[in-house]
Length: 123
Image (cartoon, rainbow, N blue to C red; front, side, top):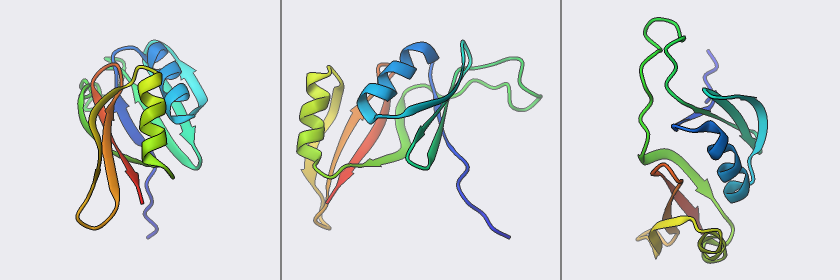
């Protein structure tokens, strides 16, 4: 059996605002846009479903997504300091400034306008 990651899911309250933010900050491209509930974006080969709560979903899937808090999606950048400086110019909330980890790599944390936090990773 071949198992692979299908997509990353990010819960938001406004997919229209999210579309512009994820495109500007991460360079994601829109694949499918069905406001007010659904936005599919792609970054390289990675797919992101950016969604709101939707009572039209099948039973068991209509539950509201968590909005805000630390996401399991980690984004890698070549130069974390340049990326964070760019984020600051764009008005992105920097939750944790770049810090060097014990293994030698660097991490920072940024948040989207709805409080979803993402770890930024760099060598």
